[in-house]
Image (cartoon, rainbow, N blue to C red):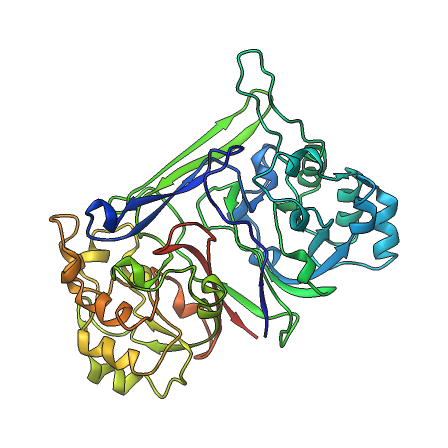
Length: 446
């Protein structure tokens, strides 16, 4: 199985006010290395729903998961794009009379040819005829993925000059009017065969109309119609985690339903690379395929959902419940904490189970690709944010991260998975931060 990353890296950029940030750093004398993210509504590889600019139409979280994960056809329009304009005729010549799957990737070659940091990424992009959106919708497409931007660049000069108009804004507007989701600014499409299984999963939030994404393509898969289960905790304003979300809806023309947020810590569904707590630990970028090979693949669930809350998870308990997980699996510890107490409750922290150090060592000895949890694993976490907790006090984290095993944290709805060995698709955003990243996680039952 080959996993192909189709995303642009999130980094400070002159065209957008979205960017990753470092909220804590060892070099600044902090206890931890921690990522942060400012999302201003658009930028880099991201998905947008019709509800962004059209009233009374769906937001991203209102759409079925199958629109974001499934078989995708790669429509190669590179030859037509060389002329500067991709016409409706070029698309019909490429797809002929056949119907298409719900997911389609329109390949122009632009995202692979021109770096996003250059002005030419906008000025030399091919123009997609808006009628392409109608043809795609008629053939069954509900989510179209592009290797170019549909965003104009706003000029900041007092006289309004200095911006860059983007004719592909008209294509996106037409696509949204037809109910299509649009993911733009993809790259790496030159590596794709004609059909792939695509995971184009934006971050999960409440009412988000746009969200950052890291599309990943699989070149081999066992079934065209698996059962998909979302096990991510959606972003929300929260008493504990440093996340500030602002949603603003402008009804006067032009309509816009816009969400911005600033996240400055390891909350909600995310991954921990060893560097998060181990100063010289592995970064997410140094992992195979920048984390994808660790976080995507067969998993093994250990069901602990009947234990009382709070309670320790011991090595003896794991030996009784775990069975024999093969090496290299993503081991999932299911406590159902979020489903039993609610993620926004203070009791989620004070009444959580905790993973004892010997239990953590027992798990690490099974050589997992990653350790996945739906509860805060360290007992000392119950004391936050009431006091400053020092790095060395997170003994369970160190027992795992210190051995080079990353975490996937703050999952939910694990009880909806109907098999012990699902295929886990846990996709971290591709950012410049080294200690981890926000994630969208789904379980696939092939």
